[in-house]
Image (cartoon, rainbow, N blue to C red; front, top):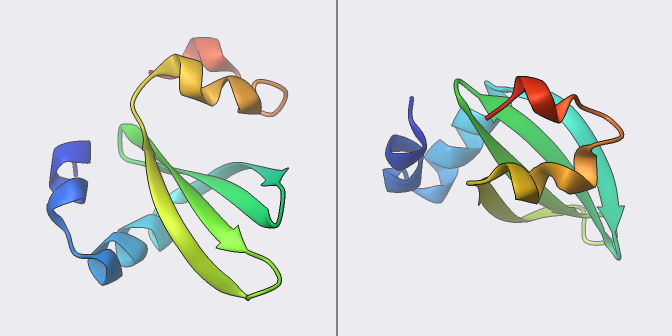
Length: 80
């Protein structure tokens, strides 16, 4: 699957694709836990609202710069 194909899916199909991917990192951002998933050759951030126990949004990663917040958990030289 490509990022373009992922973007054409509805929200439920996107969630299924993400859960079939690999969780490679996580971080906290305010009231959210942000999980980074790798799906084939691209990455998606999943914003999980901790207090509300719900998925908030999916954020596709389109540049290496966006991954800098995960540099302590992943080797940026091996991706994108």
